[in-house]
Image (cartoon, rainbow, N blue to C red; front, side, top):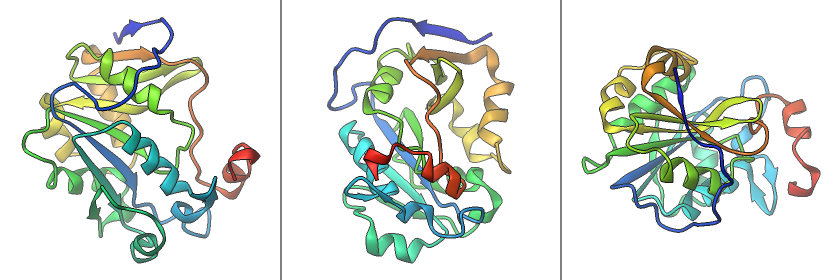
Length: 212
């Protein structure tokens, strides 16, 4: 059974992550088939949806920041500020996010002992949630956020899981991996509901208007 590592409030500490060599991976390779336009480039705040997610990742001070692109990669490179991030282009993005993870693993710094997975279309994830995930993982090989209504991203993987990440196949593979290793999974309490991701126009319109 999953272990819940904390039920207390998230401490307002930020800055450079301290759990060894920590890499962040932003998954932003989707083709946006259901949306009908590149969701990475949707207006959000003062820039785009992907800009916002990358800003969140930068605020965490990862030792290495990877971003996986695929669909509309050329447009994304032209319009999104990718400075400070190492871009991995996944030509097989149509095979699901697992193909992006596998592609990014080849670019992962050999010193990395933790990888934090972030979704490029999930702007509601706060830097403090990522900070809490790392502060409270306690060396567990798998750590996910436990929100009020369920488990969600971000998810942290210890180096013991890197081989499994390399061999993922198909869509929803990360969730199947968590199910297969349920005994190794730790959960960190994060206030609020699971942050929404953007797959359809209705999803995008449901985001807080103040952020668009």
